[in-house]
Image 1 (spheres, helix red, strand yellow):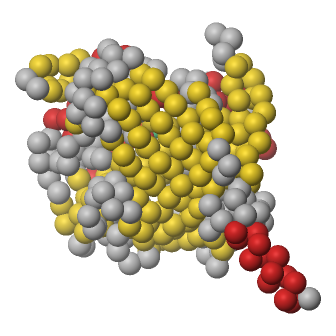
Image 2 (image 1 turned 180 degrees about the horizontal axis):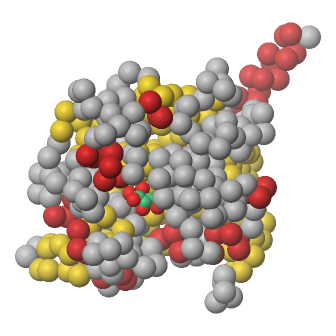
Length: 358
Ligand code: GLA
């Protein structure tokens, strides 16, 4: 019996994931939206739709959905904070929606006080992407026109989601520009590993010795500050809620965590840098990335007004986001890793989420 079971699970590990496509409704301007379900033989499933190349659900082996979102397309079309979506052309803020590239000034659509946030008024999260299913993956493509939201050059973007036998959702980003431009692509999934109202008891480790302090408008000052002795030190596993209300000026600015950590290790190589664990459920989320940073955001702006999946109200700090990315406002910070995408030189980036249980 045991031998048969071992044999079957070995077969399951060797088999690729399966992909299914279904209609998921239409946008108000009549564009059809499809949803793809990827499932691996071990039982992990991911549902990803063409609107925003959005991760709609990520169900663990025990059928628990670890991401926030909505039951239907309608929920995603209302004003909501980028749940599960790909954000771009530039994830996070560009101060005053302005920057210079090759000596030329550019003005972007401004949508967050005086600043540009997450790609502007209609970023990549609000576009219908094309999709192509592979054996164990779906490749989503979007062609962002030159001048869209103020950005120079056309940018052809491909985001490929692959479900692996190791219970990982692998996200690979590629983008090619027709002219020099700037780009910063990420996924804005909101995770809650236990189904409790908030993630304050989740234990987190971030492998980062430094973070980028911000001003009152959440624009980095340019400093890379040592985390030692601050509420930003997650090098040893620490409960998210342990210091989230500390009388620390940085925490006040974000209303909790809404900051970029400078990840240790060489950017460009895939390294395991984040581990989040729910003591209540035993579920573990591990994140590896090639990106130099992560915006760790604790859902400070959720206020209970949004009703999500299964009629659940999304209250403040109901979930956390790990937006693996380049640092905010990099186009105006010459000391930050560059976000310039040169004409014809592809941007490549990989982030892997693994969900397991202890
Ligand atoms: C990012 C930003 C936050 C907020 C959320 C979405 O994390 O840094 O300030 O905009 O996205 O609400």
